[in-house]
Length: 183
Image 1: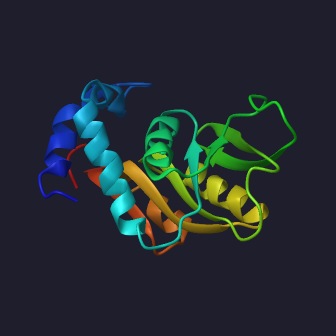
Image 2: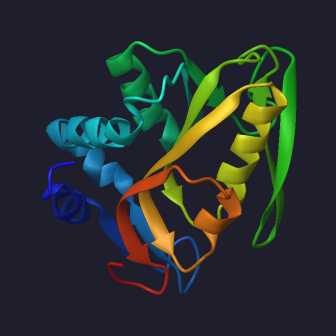
Image 3: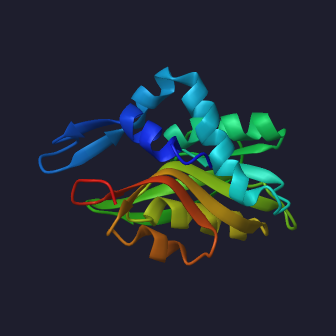
């Protein structure tokens, strides 16, 4: 990863106070998408740690993870597996539930999207408490595939997300303290 990339990403990510509720500082990556060269640099940096790991599939989490995952899959000519919210996939699915601050949610995958022996890199835009990413990993393993690693554009430190993944290969390009500033 180029040494200046985290600073360039931070400059492109907009901070929105009190969204989606008071007291939350939302890290809006949609402003980053206005800079295609920077997105390309981020996709390349996400791939670097996994280049020698025989990744066979990119698994992307709805919705902003689709953007990074699609870029990575296209760049590396790898199959892209989409993990969606309930009821969004048309074929036979498998699901994993996970806890939210205010209840529960679920992720679904097509039951035939991965098979035993596949090696998946799970990609999303943000790692916070880790519930969504952990559910993604469980879905991959239920299909018989191996989780090679997890890759995130942004990580909020101090919320326990990395620990919930319990995997040695977790990378994030930009880290913020959950309570506000850069990590």
